[in-house]
Image (cartoon, rainbow, N blue to C red; front, side, top):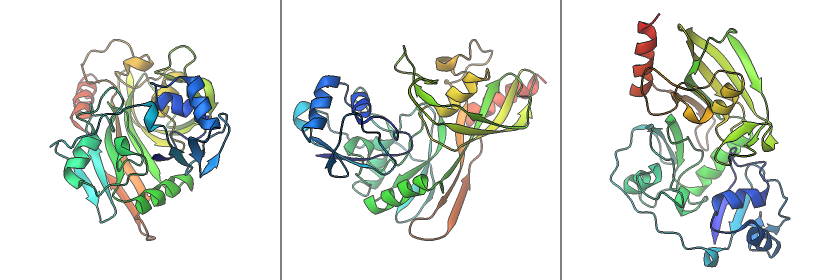
Length: 305
């Protein structure tokens, strides 16, 4: 039996679509049969395949006989721990590292590193492949990520997201000059209709998505911005900025094009988090400096002014 807690990136998906993306080895028709037969429960109840997932929903998935997943092993990978207490930690994830294993990649992820550092002192509400993981960052997006050391803390942090008390801020360098100092991008995001590895504005099963943008500095043909995520859809910042003609620097998936300075994909960093320390009323605010990839691009752009 696998138990998963739905977060802000997976809420609003149909349950059959969610399972199809997470269990690619099983056909869509087989997944629908499993749901209807009670092999997949939501908050211990049988639901229809069309059920729309909500933040905090508890999925109980009893399909171990359908698939064989390899065991996730601990790896000696150094962690950049920015803050921690007995219940949680905030990690600075480097660009190029997957947040958690997938069916195709089970090594060199943040979870492998967490297992080596914390052992069994990690929440398991989202199963072995996502031990401790409360929210995610794309592989090539660096920065701050919250880790839960136990299930009660995981539930507390998920509720913080649900109640909009968890604030996430990103730094990004985007193509072109953003004219307004402050603006919002309010456009629904769903799966791309013809390229399932991508997301798109008004895509399949599109859900409400809101990003707030603040300009920090303008360069010759690009802009340094801060992006605040109000919702947390997959690839949200990248999709929203690309949709208005300002793709993130070197984001080849969303149309940046050729560049003069080479970096490891999108120049995007989760640089600031604000949250409530679990089981207290104390607010925590953490902020980090731009990473080496970010500095490399910033130095180049400043030299071109």
